[in-house]
Length: 296
Figure 1 (tube, helix red, strand yellow):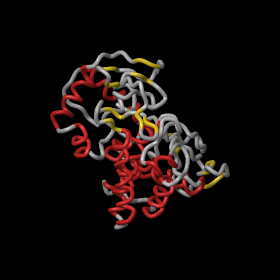
Figure 2 (tube, one colour):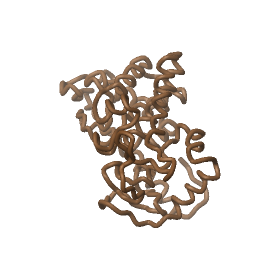
Figure 3 (cartoon, helix red, strand yellow):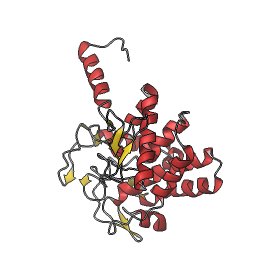
Figure 4 (cartoon, helix red, strand yellow):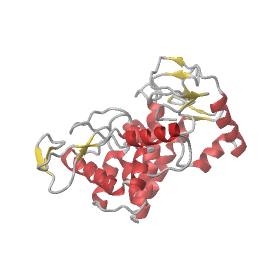
């Protein structure tokens, strides 16, 4: 990538950031093609490169989409690796580390990585297997998914980080819906599109924030500056705009474009102080927008 203009310092920052974006995933298969699978057995890569360290909550939003543009061949290898791990372990990784399901972070964000690449025309992988893996991941009964499927949200007294999980599951479900539509599966398109609107079930129209709730009650008292167990490394401000897959619906929830614009201004103009627990990840604050961490 060649840059034009800017200072030497700005170019140094750009190329350092580009280097950081290339640090992971790491090559995992050995020089002779052997690697340890998710079943903890030794496998042969047969000419392919197998990767590890898929910290997908950290990378699905920006790093993997970047790779589809600047390094599509390797990104396709990443997808084939994810599918290999599904084959060997029975589930798509959510945060894989040296052939282990760590259970770290939230969502099933292998899915947007695959769907983004597919939408851009990258199809050098088993599409039907990928689609099967997506649906399998979305229909499990763990990490609050059982409540999400049954109730349309995750109650705050049933699962920690329930607001964040509801929001991110909804986005992933929208991605599955797009895949279903592309493959002509109308039934699953309608099902997952309907599930993708579950984010609305944790939106409080009065406060205009995504809030923790249980049964038919909002959890109170509520402080949008508070960092607590209802959100993932964030507070209600930083998760306040996590409906990127349904912008028209989100605008309507806020009462119109002008009202949403005012809410966005408020995000950047709010005080930089947070309450609740100390969260070292919340950095780079501009108002309550935390540029140094993933949700923002």
